[in-house]
Amino acid sequence: MSVITGQQLFKPLKDITHESTISHQCGVTMNDSVEARCIAEVMEDKPGISVTYLPAMIRIDGEGRIEFRMSEIGEALGREMNPHLFEISTSTHYGRMVMVDDDTVVLFGNMDDALAYE
Image 1: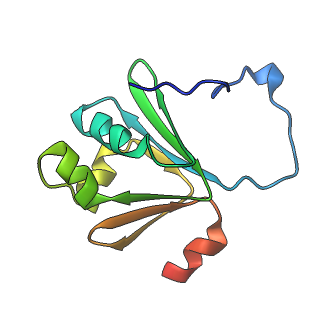
Image 2: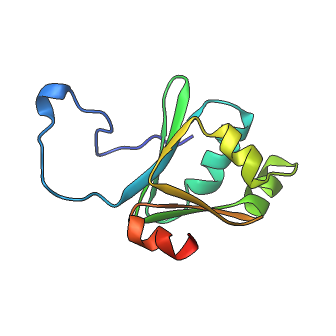
């Protein structure tokens, strides 16, 4: 089990500053479950991805784009995973979520990149 280190995911309100910049981050938050742990384990070794285990939730965050392959998750899970079951497993997401095909869900941090799939 990995826990993000070296940075604080949540900041106290007094430490938050307003900046006029655009973040290209994207990610999902999932209730801790068998499926969520499997998704997190598949994603945690990918470059640019951080996985944070909280007491009842798991967060997966990235910069620019995160690609979730259903076949890869299903193989690790030991049963079928499809985009619809994946979406049920995610409590919420930020960034633009696009189902590219029956095997691929992509989160885009840059909304312009997602327009190619509209």
